[in-house]
Length: 121
Image (cartoon, rainbow, N blue to C red; front, side):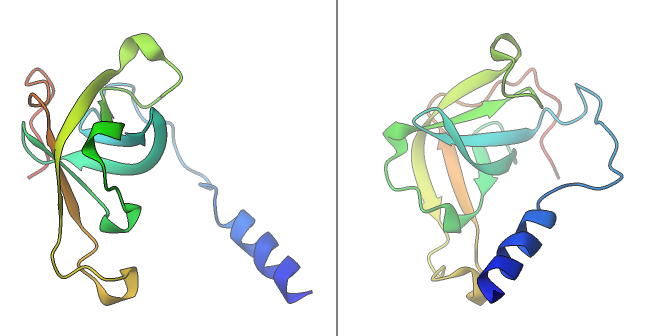
């Protein structure tokens, strides 16, 4: 019974309630971090070379990763920009989410598109 309750409770918490649809161009610095072209974690552009994401995503092989920028709808293939990942820089003190330091930088294989709005400051 408790398992069913927790399952239902977590399902209720996974939706945005009374949210507003974002303008299509309003969040181009937001990233979809993808493993083998499947969304795994979110992130955001912090410079023309780096995207910040969560260390708990546990990425190990940069060759299987890509970062998608420039869209808020991943189903629209023609409106997104996909970049390779050259290097993974996980916070050295990260062990688990509860202990903090849950950050990781992903260095783009050739830099992220400079025609995007300025990164988050």
